[in-house]
Image (cartoon, rainbow, N blue to C red; front, side, top):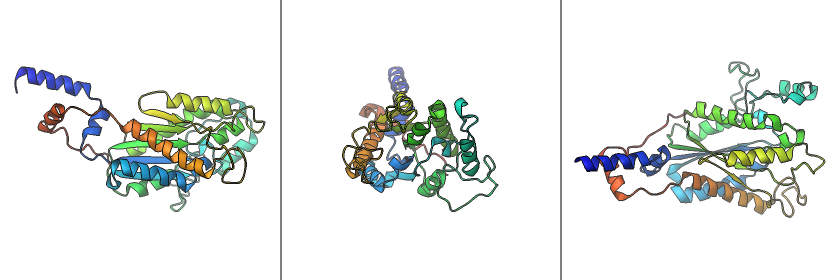
Length: 289
């Protein structure tokens, strides 16, 4: 290999990000995790999402986990959630945490922080569903799709929301042993705004979610403001949930953004041949869960 070729190859390699290297590996396997509260519950979301990513990558290259729960604040996923300063003396909130510990929907333990205390092996949690979906398979990328925040908007817990979201993301990084996680957020709809007398801090939650979705090259957000136009699945007009068609559209939007985050420019054939010659097209796999 002459000097000029070595130099050219080195420059090509330096130009490729880790995400780009992952993309050019042969048949990478993508793990998609969908979670949230009631607006992530309908099966039409996951069915539409799965059909689109399966068509894009092939069924053998897609692992999908889905876990959602009605009327659940973000603390039910965040094991280290902090009570906002204004609510430190809210006895109803304190009692609620005692009944349903922080992180219960992520991993269920009777005593927070004690994995040996009253562990229930049958109650669905996010990580149990993720582990069941992985089922000893390996994966190359992780994308976390999040549709939640309505409950935090209702009760005015925006102060803790951003830190709580990143805490959940760190939990996933640790448990999956995978630091590079793509993020797609659904911004809560325009029924959940402060002008609605039933909502305390919806504007703040929406602002936080959009800011997270615009914070870097591996994040995105989707607009849901039009998805409740008409009669929702519970029979209400222009309310906090979406129409049947709206949930299908939401699944499509989540898939569109997820695929876009996983898409990188195709490297030239010369770079591919050079990488193959150096053995750099071998699959880089993550440990199974």
